[in-house]
Length: 429
Image: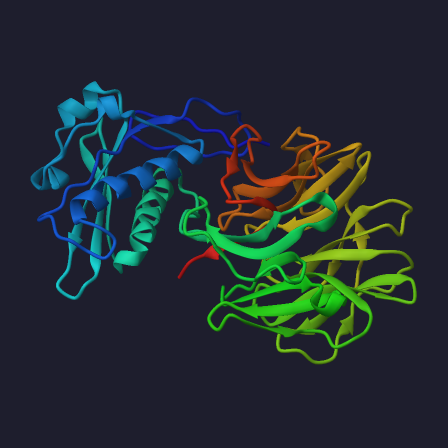
């Protein structure tokens, strides 16, 4: 399985999951002009035009499917040229697609980011969109423009206008400070959500993106909490003295899967995200954990050592019909179901830790990374990219990385401190 591209005469990236990868598509994204340079709380509109083009450029380059032209091949674009491009010039640069646009300050204090996509060879317009955003959200206008280009040229779903939550780490190995943090998918707009007084682990977004479930050691008692992004408050989800961990929210946002250790056995339970009485879903000797719902909520993938070693299993959402799906060498952990429903990502443990995917019924296993300590995958909203954390051998320090389904396009996501346990949220509304 691979994410391959082919470029026909008309500008179009054809994504298939069978072939290999060919050269990324050359694309021109010149600085965006403004009808009139005006000051805004985020800076002048002419400066924002350059910054928006830079964000669009970085998004498309990071996808691995596009090769943006360098600054030496770009030239200034007038407002008139935004809707009437100089196709002969852009054709001479080798670009097959062209992204032009503008940034305009509106009378009500908002900004409009105009986004136009052209096929340079066919000299035709492929898409146009306008995005009205507050000055503070000018980067979201850029991400939405990049999503417009990506979806029109690949036929795949968008994913640039999304966020990642993770555990920010700092301090010595035996006394790490771990805080919840949130940022845009490209690492921008980073902020900490907790102060580090209590260790936090495994944060996961709720679909509404207003709540985060995670494990915290408040008062040295590890249990699951729900953090409200709007109010900045948290509440305990499960009222028990037993150890609870590995939370994951259902696609409809109503339920939280979690694991609870009782009398030496660990099973998977579900509980309403508003609290209440947990419902036990597994009842097998050993450790059953890491539950993750299918996108339609009908099934759950989880890991269990009931066979003697960690393997992946699938069951119905009510706990019935539990079946093993992994049979390769080594152990399997931290499974997560793709939002497309077709694949399950996991951590493969064979001496080293690596990221892999297999079909939802098992089989077609493909290992995507080859480093020493990769684990904890989480899917992008379109199911084509995975974020995970990589621990450097011997240091105990980890940082965040992403890889697409080709296994070729791998990149580090910048964070202010070390990072682990990432969770990629849905596309922002």
